[in-house]
Length: 114
Image (cartoon, rainbow, N blue to C red; front, side):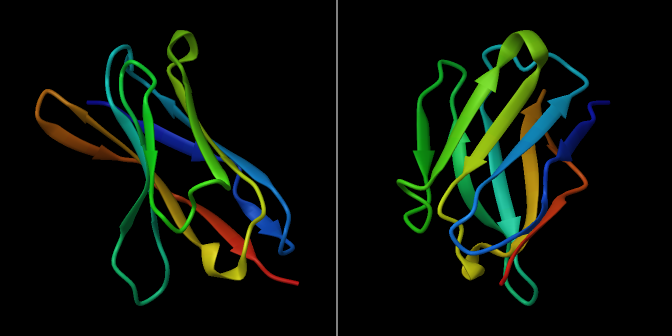
């Protein structure tokens, strides 16, 4: 069993920044990792993904504002979010797959509001 624990969410004004962290109880070495988000009444959507080698891709809505990174030594994945907009408000979830099984964190709430 693997646990993913997110942290770093909160309330921020438009234009502000937050950094989310996802700590895994198992090794993330060479494992693709991802961040998803879900706003009320909307389906969960992929925000950013990073391969085991560090290559990243992003949803078009966050490209140029968000950066996903990983520290395999700490078994942690990060999501740096800059220039936040009200439409970024959502619960953010960390995702990984281990041995063919999907694992999700409990989510961390990000609210962008003045």
